[in-house]
Image (tube, rainbow, N blue to C red; front, side, top):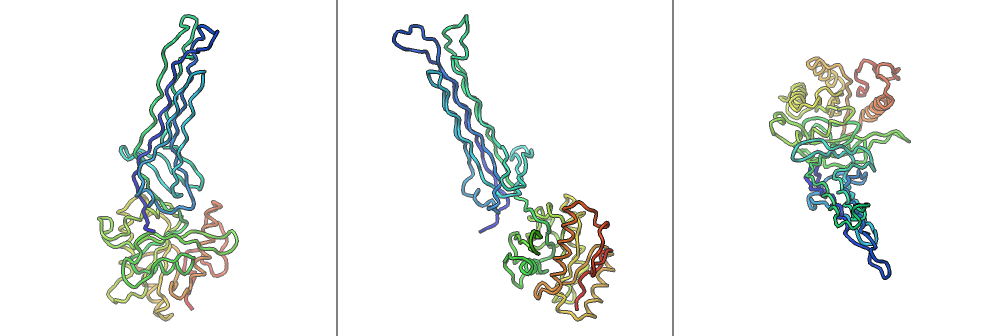
Length: 362
């Protein structure tokens, strides 16, 4: 299924039913008086978050959603039936705003959560309500008010704990395939990943987290180059970013340090405080290097970057180092979920509290 993360829809709430002008007419009951009932309220339009959806592709085929209008009032003081509400299902993580004004309407962040996006019209009043001691045969009523009509811009922001960041062919898709049940396409050419992928990493009962893989970001993405800039917004809600770097590029002229700086520049150009989000460095394809070459390239890279966050050496292809990486991620996320400062926790054997390389290659 093609990934669609934006859509524009038209929502129309139902109009309120008009009030009725009626008089009681029965045999042997002269001057029965007014008996016109009120109309029914119009149905409203709600968006509801559905955990079974992960794309907005359905809104490419249907863009207009209209709730039922209220029934008009009737004689014998009968009130019109209320219009039925319309529930429109959207994926969890959908952000809604007014298309014309840009005003934020709300967000749906949990399964089953509802958001009112178009209020139904109010019912009209029948002539019974106008009866008084000086107006015993009122012939007036009020119409129902029109339902709300809005053009909405839906934007899907993927909800993940960890986001994968890196240049094309850095190994992001290979890593998510290795540590989760997700099966994104993997190939040896750039831009293999065209749409975001989500994978659930399970480390035991009640110990799991979600990883998001987005298309690779290249230099100049902020000005429209490549694909990744369209999907960087999906990393805004992640708790942590994993920056993957190819430590053994096929071309000796390729500089891994410069590649890291290029992506950092694109994060800053994108804005939204994405550049300030916590980011760990993952050195991939270390299986292509011996221990001495790995240590030399790693030391040179960290020195040039002045890196002081955690660093990991892995092979997404063989799985070397990935178990330690996922365990460290799980510990970090568990601390985040408990709102405990990271520095206050004791380190476990093999974990460097200063953010060093927790997973040296054998």
